Length: 586
Image (cartoon, rainbow, N blue to C red):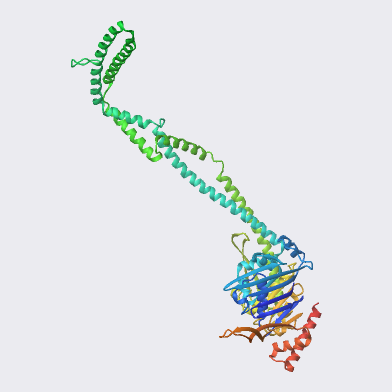
């Protein structure tokens, strides 16, 4: 419950302190008197959006403070946020707006602890609910209607919706894993096709020696120069061993040298090492001559082999360009492909198992959603009957209301689409609430809906209604006043109204007005001389009407625009009827 509201330098308010009480609190006043400023202040202190215009003109700072009566649930929430409850059990919400140039900053506190707007917003949801005629557009939305039905259904339905949300998240996780695995399988099969092709190509190449290209190039050079090699080998043989031209061969010259050194060694044994070197050289020259002769005799032109060698070289070079750069790199790559193939063909994760898991998750979600649908249908049937009963006293005794539940694609909130259908007049076909109800009808519908919730909700708090009775009069206004008073048995109600029939039902009545005052301001003239001149300002004032006379006068103003005798008498009769109603209903 909101017990105290303090406002400083907020729009047209210079300084204001309001004490609200339990039950129905009503704010009245002329159009444009500033009644909505009070509600704006409550909205702002609890984290509402702000702009530069909210700070009183000429000021750089505004402050708002709202004190609420707490309870056990709110204290538990405060402990979760690491905020200590106050000794008297109250919750003090404070917000400061600071304007620096064109930059607006704000700071929020709960019980003196600095908090962000997200935390303040969470507290707001636990403290107040603001309903304005312009906000009924939210009620037109199917998603909001489903949310309202779920709240009406109570704890059992909400717990089942939580189960559906868990089942939905699990279903989505399995679906994602299955899609990923299917994509992985697609990629795997494509990779296997590529591996098969590459392995086949490399396997057919029969790669074993990383130096094969160099060897083949040497063989190619030999095969392509057979004639040259034969001629050169023969010439070498002639020089080394047997010279057909008549000149002595190297072997002959070495033999002659050996003879000379042998003779010399007979006289000087120091020649022996040299003699041994010549003898070794002669042996090697003879051996070389014989081998070069054999080499030359063995040389034979082989065009077919030359072709094979060139083709093999071309093949290996192409493979090196494709998988290399070197043949050694290609052989290593071939081994890696074989290892990858073994890994891909040994995959333990089964698509079939994931498909089974997906089916189980889907069936679990469908079952949970069906149970949720059944609970919603039960709640819808109950809401249809109760809402119609709540609307009858609001001059809508012929109304038809249907809460239609139809299937939709799975969501975290189930597989149901909820649409409120409504027919306010006999003989009219029911249509969606969004396309049927007028402004006045929507006001009564909201009140009736909230009345339904008071019997299913085990909570209290503050409900704020901003001119929810706009567009109605007479018996309907009286019925709205009585309904607001009924709601005030469970909630604290703050209501802005222009209806005397509604205002008469108030437990606490406040009159909002604008006044023109003189404020002292220091101005500088052209000669820089300081002058204290009066400044005319408009401010909002709120007066608690805590006695019968002031209430009668205010109701008379709402009724006839003056305090004439007839208006006063009518206002007195309204207060008397309201008192009788309260006594009779309690």
